[in-house]
Image (cartoon, rainbow, N blue to C red; front, side, top):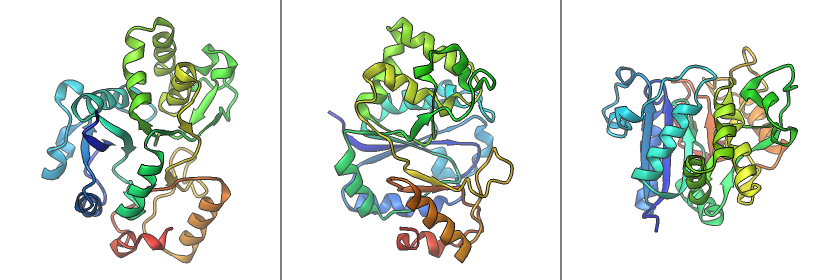
Length: 269
């Protein structure tokens, strides 16, 4: 039986932009008797200055090299450590620029409602796999040409099977290795694996981390929030209203973003 409610997984390259916000939020969860664990993957540990974050780094033997578009091996190693060291009902994933934007009480309510489910916001690949070889989808049958946000929440049943079934299922392992050898595999692998494993039976197709792609500076990265203006509020409101969602987190935040806005979840939702 899981002894932890949620294991929060952080895939980072440096310290958290808003560590103090996270720590206040985690303390709020604990005051409500909510059991959570934290695990952190950073390819270059010297980039971490925070003593608090260092306490949660995964062992060196679990660390994998990361680069833009090449994150899947690190993610799978992080998840494998999380499920072994801190088995939980849910496993989340966050970057260093992510921040919780719902109250601890609201988060617990959502968890209680959906703890047997996985959140993967998936859709058919929006590119032509025959021309653009992201995640090596061109080597897979059309039904597996899927894409999703990498900021997923997995229930224990799904993540356990994603980590362990490839060890004994040759077909699933072959698909995973094919996808993993392609660029940006982290934005296709989960939907593909869970479609093969259980036909997405536990998956709720809604995003949980709000990201502003409307103002992307280069097509590869979302907008970074450095202040909170009427324009920012309008964009966030439009993203919330455009499709069903269960937003609990948000990225990317810069260090200058005002803390008082983050400490007032009502400002967002």
